[in-house]
Image (cartoon, rainbow, N blue to C red; front, side, top):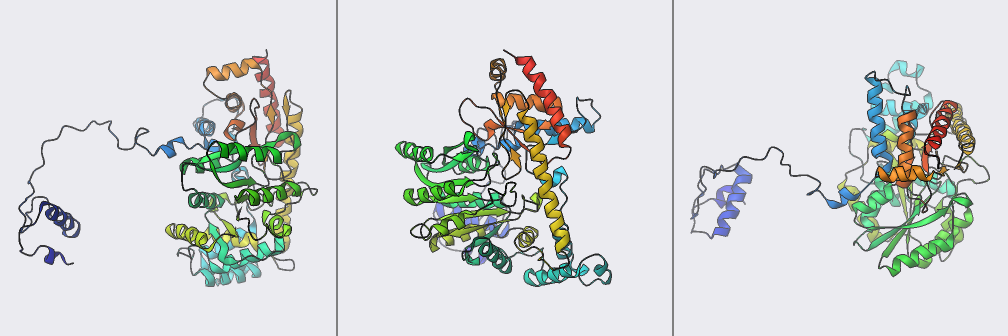
Length: 534
């Protein structure tokens, strides 16, 4: 309705009508509060009543008024110790003398921050798709291989521009190549209509949990130790995180009876279990689940009516040929009926890990398997609200699932770089495992996958008492002291969850200079134990 029609002369209106008219007028024509609306028995004062001076310290958003779910969410990987590490890094840059000359960020799986070289093929694709004029530039043939130039041209034809929106689920052609990758990996069909490209796997996890959780009594089973994304995302959705414990003595494998006990206990406490999360290869544990464990999990999800969340972002980080990566999609469909057609499975993958290591590019995907059409529609609606993931990240996913093939010009360099990264990580992990196991009171399982070690530490009672006096968890106390003495930033095991009365820390093995790292740690550990020896 036109504003002129709304404001034409008419019979007196009620107070409610006048209020509505004033609202419309303010929005549509910026009528000031000094103006008088026609036909109204009310008018606005030209001046506001005197107000007391505002307290300069007053703020609308404080811990007392903020969303309590946000306040309660925690993410230890970037918590207090990581913040302190940044302060120490600033001190070094300012010339302050510290017991070390560099801060080593072993708290987060951020490969390229720790000197992992980007894969040439992916960066060439990124350069050409970000600046397409280079594709036809005469000198480009001296810089870029012919197969990269051809692929970049095809990609630009598919997406139009990296600065444009794509389909909310991701570029259709890229989703088709993701589906082909899954089919070739698992030997089972995949549909691009059930694949969503995302801004990293974390976005996909958060979105699926948002769709899944419908009440505060809903719960999700998470492995302990776990990646803190899950407890944080569940806290934001005001849902319950239900722990099930991995067995350190069995190389962080699954105890099926313990899992069933966790399910029974949660339900007896009124929790409506919705899903079960599996991280394979494991974060922070670095384990790879056995095929038997995987099949047990599928059967439990079928029996208990649970959605299976398979976090598989470390599937390219495999170090033991005796435990190759097997996807949960393959495990599910290899089992056949009744599991293959009934267990609801969502699988996540990412360009942030593996030999790609493009964390900052934010690219990932998830595949929905056995989800109802109405559920897929709601997931799509949520993706639509977020418009689309970054095109740069989507191109990264495209390269991840469809790398250069043998015989193409770029293949040999791509393979050399990937193999070099994999071998380097394996070597670093072996050096650190050996060093940890030589420390008094420290034991560490070998890394079967991922990019982390999760050693257990036996702390003296005096250290535990000192930690409690400081208001800290004992392993957080130890980790903070390690940082202050060595510049090495790790994450305490309490940030991931751990069995009662056990203490751990998580470290990546991404950093170069592993021998020097191990020496720093050895010196600190001996000094710490001597200080707090009972």
